[in-house]
Image (tube, rainbow, N blue to C red; front, side):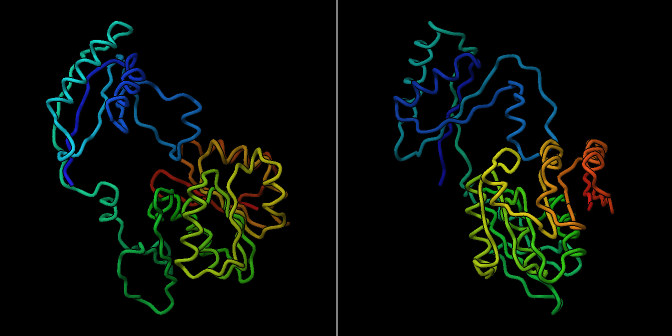
Length: 316
């Protein structure tokens, strides 16, 4: 479907008021572009450790909204927007205060990314396959993992996820108990279970990710008795600390350095003696900090593996 896209050139001071007034004329959602720096709270909620270089915040902002051509009179909408600008400018800076329109391409934006997610080998004998793609096993020994990440992190293609899968491939033993902190799509738990682990406990702060992980367990025909899913923050939630269990053979966390460091302070009770702690999601500029956190908490670093600018620690 093609959409008519309206773009308002304005100022950040006006965005909130514009949003409210656009809602009154039937605009159901807006997209905002600005150069306002991310707060520390915003950064903690992000699942990346590399942020784009900030642009100078000149106060400018663009507000986009979309309408279906058959349900829209573009000229009328543009006049309504101009009236809104006139009203808003009596209260705050509206910047340029202009509106332009364009037509989007006829694409399925929700699913278009799927064309770039193809089957690939994440470890010597582990192949990740999106649920909508066909794949013929190259080797009888291959372990096939089917994934539909939805809006959860974890297609398996990112370097940090590959590093964790390769570590699990090397260290998981038959009958192991695994704790997956920050499970995303559930891909690491599924990999561990297919490699022979008896049970996986998977945790994520995002309720949607936990739901997606459960769906991917089902797709991979993992019996419900083999896994437990929880949403919440293991670092701060005392109830979850109890539910997560103690004495796991392996704890794996593919998150970010800013979360791995405080996690390392509290994770030891969840790992059995001589159990393994596998952590990734660590950009190379944070490697020393994570190493220091591991050593401070009495972990012995067995190995560090690298892929591009990312690293993975295997410790006990």
